[in-house]
Structure formats: C-alpha cells, structure tokens
Image (cartoon, rainbow, N blue to C red; front, top):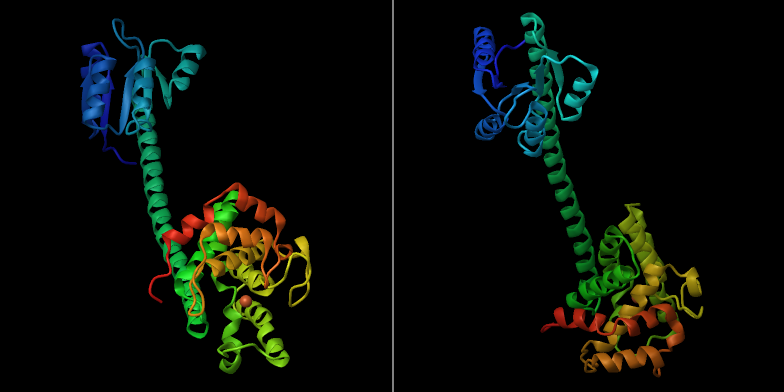
Length: 355
Ligand SMILES: [Fe+2]
C-alpha cells in the first residue's frame, strides 16, 4: 500500500505536532502543520492535502469538529478525508466527529501502527474514489459528445429529407421551417415536454414528403386536377407515412409519419385518406394542419399576395370559399385567440425571402 501523500496535521500542541510529523515523515509522507483550525483551513485552501489529521480539543478558536465543517464547505476540500485525534474516546464524541464530516476517529494516546494503517487505508480509498470520479466524468463527456453528434446527424438527416421534398414541391424552405417553428410554439403552450416540442419542430416540415411519389404531370399541373389525378394526388398522405415508417421507429419519425398520414384529415370528418374526425386525428397532425393553413394564407405566391396576420386569423375563424373553420380543431383555434401574435412573430422572424 502507498506511503506517499501530503498530510495536514492540525493540533494546538507543538509537541504533538512534531512527534506526529516525524513519525509520518519517517514513513515517506509529506507534512503540512497548523497550530489552530483557522490556520489549518488557510493552509489547506492554499494547497489541498490528501488527508487531514485533526486534533479535537483546541481551546481559543475553532475546535476540530468546527474546523472540519469549514473544510467541508469548500468544494475543493469537501472530500479530503479527515481523521480526528482525541483524548476523548466516548461514543458521543465519535458520533459528533462523524456528523461533522470526519472519516475516522482515533483515540489518544494512539498506537503508531494502528494510526498508520488507518491513514494508508483512507488515502487509498480517497485516491480510488477520485480516480473513479475522474473516469466517470471523462466517460460522461465522451458520451455527451457522441450524443451531440448523433443528434446533429439526425437533425441533418431530417432537414435533408425536407429539402428533397422542396425540390419536387412548390413550397419554399422558409415555409417548411416556419411550419416546424409554429407547431413547436403551439406544443409548448400545450405543455408538451421539450423533447416532444423538438420532435414536432422536426416532424411537421415533413408533412408533404409523400409528394415526391406523385408524377410531375400531376404535381406540377397548372389548372385543376381531374378526378383520377386528384385520387393519385391524395395518395401523398399515405405514401409519406409509409416512407417515414420504412426505416425508423424512433419517436420523431413516428410523429412525422402520423402527421404525414393525417394532415389532410379534417376535424369534422370530411378529410382524407380515412375520414377521421375530432380527436381521432393525432394532435400533432391537427396542429400541423392549422399552421399550414395559416402560413399558406400569409405566403406570397406567383398568383396571389400574402395576407396580413389579422386577415389570415379572420379567415381561420370565419372561413372563405375554399375553407371552413369546422375543418380545424376549435380548441387550437381558441388557443390562437388567446396567444394573439404567436404565429405572426414566427412569420416575421423567418420571412419568405426572394424564393
Ligand atoms: Fe399535403
């Protein structure tokens, strides 16, 4: 067992100090000494010892227990083992010593071999614990870095998928990013966890990803679709869900699949593909549908100007020739009234740009 280490001896009796110091130096330990608790703390703060031998009775200043409590308040010294040395060998004083943060209690007069054995044991334990904590901290940091990289790859992968959708669709990058930001803002108000908010922020922009399966002659057709073309167009919801579930069952992909599958369902049951109604439609999809309508109303298109926030909200509440408020979740519409300006702020922060 190792006999190296820096030991601080605190004792108000100079003779005790020198006897103990000589004994320990002879065993190979390095020694620092203090004649009072106050001086002991000051020395320990300048240079952290590996172990402290602490006299208990030191009249005229802090006693050993008080000194130990002060040592424990300094984060750097909080775990340094303290061994009390005391002429009092009663159970009560030992209990007080342990309560003050001491690791061991040796009665005076001590037997040198016993004291040395205890010192070596506590030094060994202290070093093992420090080593373990260093190892745990290193491994935790390494793990955190791997998780960060994974999270980043994941985010990039989702963004790439969203970008692939933009190549085929007429939507702009700003539109898909806003859909994510609006959805997360609403989810946050609804009390979703931070992880769930991040999921919907990443998942909602993928709601139309199934459109990559729709032929150009239909997807890019100018003018109205005929019945057969419309039937094909509607398959983008199920196609998107199939694609998103094909390679991952992680929560974010599952949420993206639910949104893709149900973003054309309507609250009154008149939507597609399954004609779900009310709360049969997953909440994430109801949120995405709402913000998609809002953003479409506000966005500029080659054939129309973008609408102001108030006008867009009015149409959400009252409907127009293409759209009826019964299509949307009334609780979410009420939430927009309550949090007036929530969506407008996001629209203004991420404007459409020149696309
Ligand atoms: Fe769609």
